[in-house]
Amino acid sequence: MVVAAYGMLLPKEVLSIPRYGCLNIHPSLLPRWRGAAPIQRTILAGDPITGVTIMQMDAGLDTGPILLQRPYQIGEFETSQSLHDKMATLGADCLIETVNLLAKNSLTPQSQQDELATYATKITKEEAQIDWTQTAQSLECKIRSLNPKPVAYTLWNEQRLKIWMAKTISTEISPETPGTILQASPEGIDVATANGVLRLLALQLPGGKKLSVADFYHAKQSQLKLTKKFSQSL
Image 1: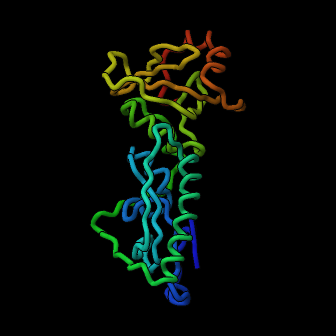
Image 2: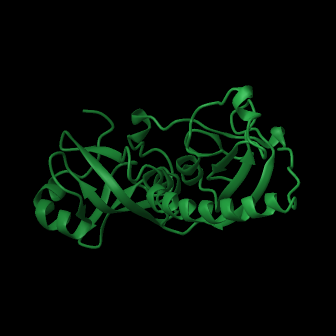
Image 3: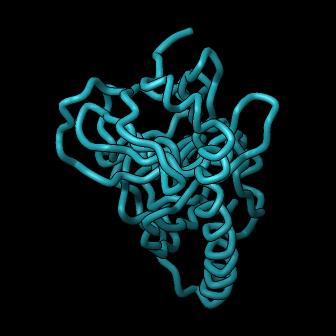
């Protein structure tokens, strides 16, 4: 039996049925990021490397013995969607390799180091709001981790403005208050944070479609000149 993104614990009587046990394809290098949202939490934490683990399931949550692991270096602009797609491909390859090795009795299950475990709790909608008092780098990771859902947002002109993509362009402390729009152009909307400057690159207003920052700027240029700061609440 093989499961992926199953999200439930199997009873012992089920786990003991298959000859080689029940196999789980998990998109992280266990024991890091056990749980419901390993892909999102990996990007949110700014991890440089993740990977796929093929494990034998036991009664715990992603606690079973490791059969095979393959690392993957996270790209500079990786989102949860792009990482999900790459982990799906890598996971399929790893599963085939694992099954072939099991058939040859060439794998020795390795117990996880529980003391190194971290837990990937489910992403909530409440986490999606941008707090400009965080650093530019942490906010960039947050935006990429919440793409494609629930999508990070800030408040602008009493509306929720979704931010689909952004990048850090400076890690120096700005003299301006976090959330201040430092400049806006077709290349990007630059915003002061607690540490560094974040450039917004893809945006979406309620009822509208996702726009490149160039299209957003041309449509809202006059409003951007009047509203110089993103708010924390309506």
